[in-house]
Image (cartoon, rainbow over all chains, first blue to last red; front, side, top):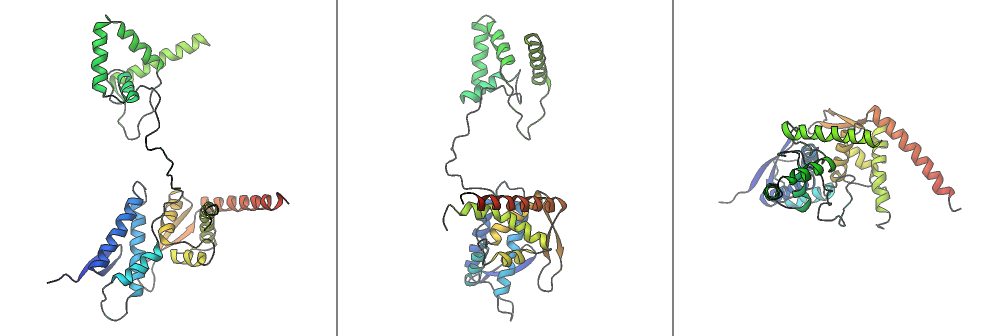
Length: 192
Length: 105
């Protein structure tokens, strides 16, 4: 026994596709979805494309009887529609693969105190737990001078901008941000 | 096509689509037909993402209209913002056009 055709729902139209045509259709739509990944209108554009494919295929079908779309009918339709081009997206092959180096900042989200250790970890590409353990060890070794170092860094380092979609900063990191802001404004007042 | 010309064509496509949509309410095959045979001939794969972007920027909007054959169609037209944008583009286009023809002669 052989499967002869696949029924596919393309947006508002339902069509029968030959096995090979169906595979080609699926790969076209997959490719389109990949190109549009992250586009807020992805679903809408895909629906529009599906409808365009369905319209073109039904236009090519012989009007007699319930037809099955073959590769010979699908291929010119896809050819006409063309591959998906994202507007304004110039192909950027010379983009560096590595994300741009970030400045040394404190990271308030998920911080234990102010986010200095997180900032150092991010800057040097280290595990944050490792940085924290080293900081605590230095605290003991230095006989408490580490507290001063931490405070200075906390007052000097800028705060990293909030990541979109991250939780609101609360409790200790929020307080330490307030404190740093307060001290900075006082220092500015004294200096100016 | 000369790779030096491609960015010009690409940059102007949005302007031309706004012009076409601004003239009367159209659906995608109308736009494609209008551009076919010109330097700006394009395809659904380019046009649908562009129209979605323009809609998101509140320059165009669409409404569904029943058709005699097949499913309802999306008819696009300009919004107020789109009309203002088109006027600004038109004006800018005329000015740079003048500059281009004046310079170096």
